[in-house]
Image (cartoon, rainbow, N blue to C red; front, side, top):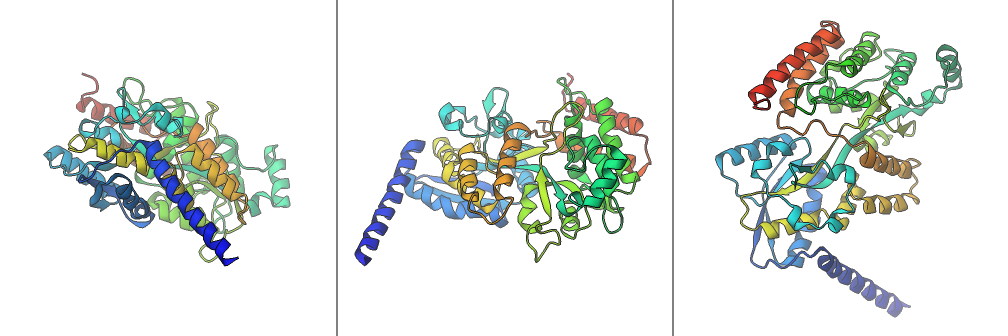
Length: 444
């Protein structure tokens, strides 16, 4: 029996080794003996696990060496890269990228379409890949994605007395909101402060501008039109901003919300004081941990509501890898990007908890979830996949997005506080954005 086990182990190892070489052949990575590929990458927490696990494997498969010359959070790495690009001091071949940032780097990136076949790209979410292209070129290969989903308290939504009272008052069943109008009804109905607030959002900086964009797109609105003129002050924007104002003025949001960022709103939901809100998937394990969360086992997930245009909200982004124009080893750098975004590394990150961008990885994870004791394990993945493939919509792909956001969010705060009229405030913000875009040369 021991001999049989030993033989099986040897055969299993042999199969795994064979598969790794098949993988290298399938990806057409090539050999780069003696080449050192330098990388400037996002770091911290779980971001670095993929480097530790797969860079040594890439080195074994190709003969190249990978040297990480910088690691930092998204904002720090953005500052470094912009300084390096402006000064011409780039000493790395592969760099971090993101849907919200990449348009400001384009002049310094290597187009990737000649390094990837359409067959190699076919497994990626088409919805995400359309945002990886601009001006006829492919600028990055996605690593993993971020999108929000509706988190709602099942102990509240399934309460028979609350269901009866809601039906009497609003004429339809208490259930996860399918539209933003229903979201407003339900948030106000379930509001019972300070024990329970109907909803919340992160209330400042890009976090607030992004949630406004979430609702705006659902109504069919845009931040900028096809001529790069501000378009958020039309009827769709007025309705989106009015929703934020009405909920805040009704007391259905915590009074300190305009100072909240991601950690704050997540802590509120975990502490059991929020009935429902839209949140990134990445907080799931925190919410389901009974040691850190009072709502563990007491919430469910749903697709974000639709607006008047029949569109589901889908503010989203994707982390990615690019090759710099300054690289002296572009073929080797592209091979590293191809490998680190391939099926096995993506599955590895998907098992950690990141949202995959390959459909094959989703299928594997859903199959694995069938044996999970978590009742939401498979549903969560199925919902993610639908949203990534159908709802994923980043903010405007322009270098000025953060500057636009810095104009928008103080205006939205003033509207929510009642210090500005909705139309007046959005018109003022639109005028400032138009001046910003004119100075950037968009109307010449």
